[in-house]
Image 1 (tube, rainbow, N blue to C red):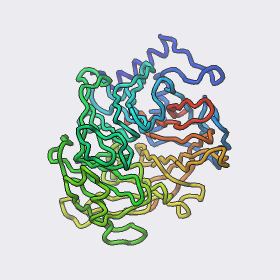
Image 2 (image 1 turned 90 degrees about the horizontal axis):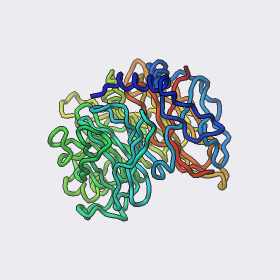
Image 3 (image 1 turned 90 degrees about the vertical axis):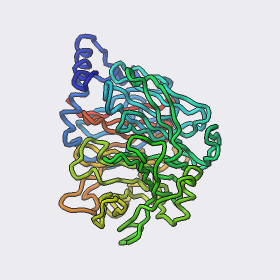
Length: 447
């Protein structure tokens, strides 16, 4: 087994001995594979998160923007393009590393949000090679990816009305979750792909596990819901109980004390959103991504807090998963507005989409406001950072600042994800204008 330390040592040796040539911004679209120096810089600078001076305004964007430096970033932050179309399929969306197991941290997996014939690709961060590892004609709008605590990969479809139904589960009206198992010796060789309809048929985007192995997910629609799946057996997603969140003791706009309501097991495999409608669950405007501190390796006070981007409402919720009534069944929760436009975020904060926590609890938030240059859009989509609260529970973030801004009016940042070990930040540039070649970018701290 290759440890992360061995991997980073190998990268450093490759940089010095192998003579990996750096490509200039003028003569290359795709930079070389990341070197040990890049990773060391990220590790040294990101133990407490990136240190940066907030951008005062969004980038003035153009069609296509910069093909080599897609973002405007603060001083001290570098960006490297580590992969690009046509080396992988169109519309890369969510990212995850192989967080455990063989060669942990070496491979970056991506789902591709195409209308049909969806695929999953992997980028080898040691060699820079990119390849497709799974593809099916009936997969549509693949979006979320998450590494499971037991070393497999989950992907799911983001559709409320499936056009290409799974032949084994034709009764499912919306998107399904699939679990990918890898060869024991090589986490880029797929051994088996298994549908997991028990989690629910719906429009999936955010998916995250808590420390107990429960899976949280959403249905992206209006009203959309927040779900919890508790497996009958830990590590086995073939059966279990799906719950949906309902605010029962409101203190504000769908915030306050909440309960997890059980849903009919057979019904969720057909249409989980319809089952949530039946119990009058609390709905939100286009919930999209979810994040939880267990995905960062930092369990200090944050492993029981779930964040949810509510896109069309311009806010991010904090959901305290600790049982508010002191019970042991985790049947209750507490919902707080963590970031809200016009409250603790500027009026320029709009349509939060994807989320990622660094190891110090800073929440990185990408925007997806839509629009294009032809429709009058002149500012790039931004990445914001919400600082963690101090000294209390159920509080809004004390500050929300602009971290980066896209130079391309047509594109959006997606799949934001932090490396567990180094603090390196990955994000995709999706729907690019200009050359139309989507890209994957890594942010590091400058040496």
